[in-house]
Length: 166
Image 1 (cartoon, helix red, strand yellow):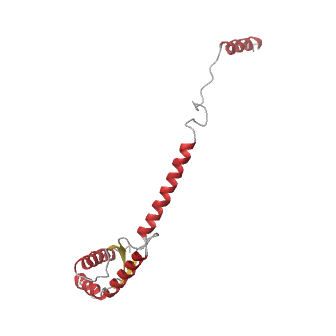
Image 2 (cartoon, rainbow, N blue to C red; image 1 turned 120 degrees about the horizontal axis):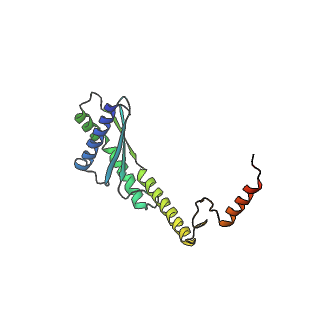
Image 3 (tube, rainbow, N blue to C red; image 1 turned 30 degrees about the vertical axis):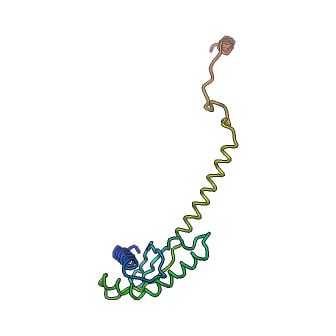
């Protein structure tokens, strides 16, 4: 979807479908649906509409939430014709794209990643609490130039006297 025209059509389809689901589709099976993304093929003949349902089907989902997701999918399938005709009317295109509704698993994946990161953060904090606050090396790890003591200076002077001059 590098074509700007195709991207504009996809954005417009997303707005049209979201407004239609909010205002005109009165199916009781329809849950709280959010249209997250729309992808349109390059020839604008097919549009994949990604959606999420609030509180439905996650890793710890109950049977009720699973049933709500299935009911919402069925409601979207039954409203597909109405949605497609409204998209065609508002876009003013000669051929209206076919609509395919796909449940977006991105929120569940993001939630799982957040849980994994939270566990890793907790383990890091536990490891940090167990170790002492002392540094691994010396208090001042930087090398400094060697300071000459009085004995070193005397040794250098004695070594210079022993050498014959050329």
